[in-house]
Amino acid sequence: MKGQAFDTFKLLIAAVVAIAILGILLNILSNMPNLTANPTNTIKTALSDAYQSQGIPSMSSSKAAFKKNINFPSTNELFLNAVGGNGISFDCSAYLKPDLCEGGSTLMIKRDFQAYVSACCSSSDCKVIVGNETATCP
Image (tube, rainbow, N blue to C red; front, side):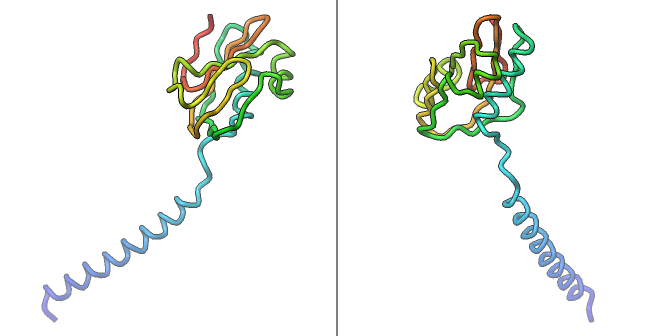
C-alpha cells in the first residue's frame, strides 16, 4: 500500500470518529436542564434576602423565566411571608422594554422573557426590580 492511500484512510476514520463524538455531545447538551429559574421562587428569595438585610439590595444569581399572561400580585402569601407582611411593589419599567411587563402592586407579564430579579427593603416596604442585575436601594 502506498503512503498516500493510507493517510487518506486515516483521515476518513478521524472524520467519522469526530462526527460520532459531535453527535454524542449534541445529544448531551440538548438534554441539559434549563438554566433559568422559577420566577416565583426567585422573587421570594430576593425579597427574603433583602428583608433580612434591609437597605442592602438582594440580587438573583440567575435569570428567571417569565411567561406571558402570568401575573405576580404583591398579595401573594409566599411574598408577604418573606417580608413579614410589609408592602411590596414591582418595577420593571426602568430596565426593560415596556411591552414585556408592567409593575406596580402586581407584576403583569406581557411577553415571555428572561430577566434578573433584585429586591430592596426598608423597614416598611420592599421593592422588586425585574430586569436589572444590580439594584440600588433608595
